[in-house]
Length: 333
Ligand code: ZN
Image (cartoon, rainbow, N blue to C red; front, side, top):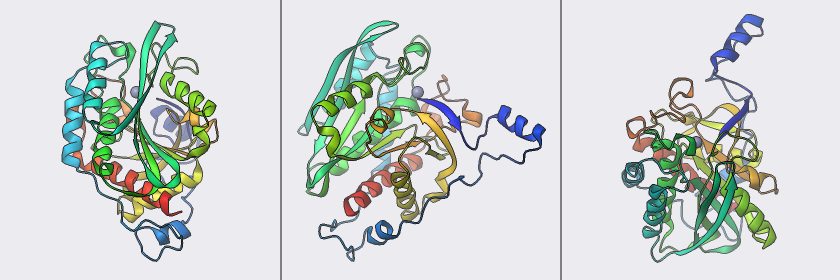
C-alpha cells in the first residue's frame, strides 16, 4: 500500500517544516484530529444479552490463538519472497488452500496486464455462512513486493501477517453456527505495484474483484469490508485511515476499547491507498486496519528488515481479537 497523505505526521520533513514555520508542535503520538465518536447503541449491545435487536448474537466474539497465528506468519515468511508470478507465490497459494480444506472456498483468478508483463493473479475467498442477510468481508493481501523480488525481502509483516491472521480467523469461524452476517475471508493478490505505485500500477486483485462483485450483485450485500495490513509489528500503532468509513472506524475503536487495546489504536490519522479503495469507490463501508509506523519513521516498510524478529504474537492477538470483536459488533448493529 502507499501512504497518500497524513493529517498528523511523523515524517521528519513535516516536523521540520512545522517547527520552522512556528505553526505549532506536531507529534506522531498526538491525539487523532477527529476523536472517535461515542458509540452508544453498538457499545451498549456488544457482548451483552441486553441487546435491543431481535437477532443479537448470543455469544461474545472468540479470541484468536496468537501463538498459532505467529506460527502461520513464520511458515508463510519462510517461503521467502512471494511476488506474483513466482514459484513461492504458487506454493503459498497451495499452503493457504491446504489450511481451508473442508471450507467453502472459491477463487477469483485472472491474468493481470501490467507494465512488467502479464501475470496470473488469484484472490482466494473462504465463505462462512451466517443467519443474517448480508456479508462481512475480512481481507488481507498475501503477495509480496514485486520490485523487491530479487532481494532478501520476505515481508513478514507486509504480506505475512495479513495472510496468517486470516488463516487463524478461519480457525475461529470453522464449524460454528454464525448468528450474524456471513463472513467471507479474502486473501487478496497483487496488492503491490510491479514497478512504482500509481493508480494503474497497484491493487490489481481487488480492482478485479470489486468490478466482478459489482457486476454479479455481491457488492450490495456487503455490510462491511475490514482490511488487515501490517498488523504484526511488535510496536503496534494502528492508524485511523482517512479513506475508510467513519462509522466503521469508530466501531473498530470501540471494539479495541472493549478489549482494553485502545492505546494501540488511532494515535494519528493518515490516508493510505490500500486494498479497500476499490470497494470504498463502490460505496462499501470499509475500515483499513493498518500500522504504517513500522520501525522508526516506518523504515522497515518495503525493506529487507521486514523480518519475523520485528513482530510479536501480542500484536497479532490485539489486531485479530479487535477484528473479531468488530465483526460481532456489526452483527449486533
Ligand atoms: Zn507493501
